[in-house]
Length: 182
Image 1 (cartoon, rainbow, N blue to C red):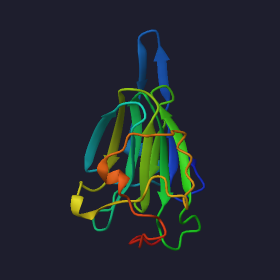
Image 2: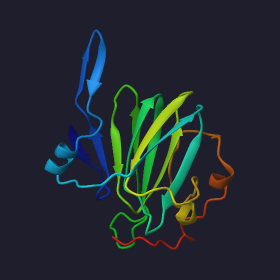
Image 3: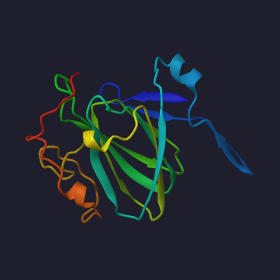
């Protein structure tokens, strides 16, 4: 298992060891021991899964303290472009984002610490996306940054994504008063 740093402190791309043969493949999607050896200690309390059609954009979501979530996300079937936006005041990368392609072929994962807005757009029909989180879902603490905010400059590579009503009404980044501190 490899843990690759990104330009945003705490955001990692995790590349598991995948063992393939004529029968299929095997991989550890999570190993507490290996994470601890890498200096990463999290207590995950909930696993979530979604399935989406091609061109669905979900995000940019977060939960405010005390229910802020650290997340590991991955694709089980299909492909997404996954995005993390740093919302932590005082961070040298505040307002910046990192994108990674997560696919069923590469089996990569994305670790997002609390204080990140998270979103993804699906590249294939019937994409199955899995989340492992450190806090339960708490809708009263939920927030959403506008996915196409020009101040963030995210190139989703998707002209007309399918959006929920909530995602269409996200707040602009400049109007967002972040509760997160670096």
